[in-house]
Image 1 (tube, rainbow, N blue to C red):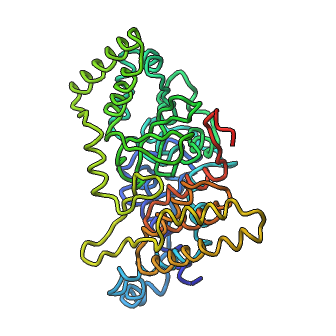
Image 2: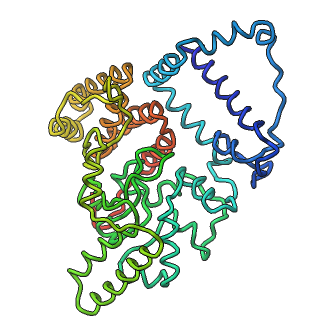
Image 3: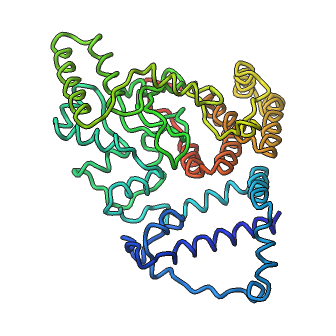
Length: 424
């Protein structure tokens, strides 16, 4: 196992060296200069780092026996080797810590971020580990065009998170703790897939954001959650304009005549702006229909998960051998255990499910661990945090969604309820 991990590490180092050297003359210089702490291949591919360049001398064995070495590194079943590496990683909990250390290499000393890049999109990706879609920037432009403050007052919404980096009235280039940005508007039940961009009634913990199945893909939909009401994440639309239209429509039904007139005017402005800029405002039912077709499991969040599944072999996901109702009963018994002895006893049923996940990972059904890990996160309870870290840390690595693992760790380190009326 150690030799295999060593091999994987050498591959990663060679890959990063290649990214640093390839097409170096055509790439722009990194804005951080010699203070750059970035280590991920995405950043190294995009920017040039002269101070990091180094000449790697080929090993004698590679010069003498290239065919033999190549056969060792890339056998005819190389896809199987990759698959086996993922499986081995999935059954080795320490790999979670390695992965976290690797991604924390994106920040500086004391867990502080480097100074912000001049490019606003790169700045947001650096701080939140995900890219914002086009409708995010277009919605900001819309708010600016009609006076952002008036928009917030009439809707009872506040733009937060990534939007705050677009606000020129705020200092965005100061050194800040990376975990603070990842968790500042992360509510108690939010999975790593949920990125908050608006908050409403904080007494209830109402918030709106993007839901991504993969951190390297565009959001699957815009959604909402009310923390005081539980974990359920509700898909609203595929863009912010359509989602806000729904909020306005609900507000119109509940408002007095004067407020109703304000909201009606705002809705028309929003719809006109969206129409001129080619943004479709579709009904929520359409989004729910599309989501239902894509998801492989509902989870306690009810918005579902999506993982790659081979159509012929069905490899990629297998059901948890227990109903959602029974899993909730198992979790409830563990949380309500009067003492540690009873808690350990009541945890046997959950440990059995974790064992099934390990079997599933061995056979490349990575979706099972993702589902169980998210179910535990959605149920709530600090007692589940170590198991959540293991299940989701492994699942995210095997599914190549490692940015989510970093967000998860930050969240569990500072998990709290933001709804002000919640007294628990």
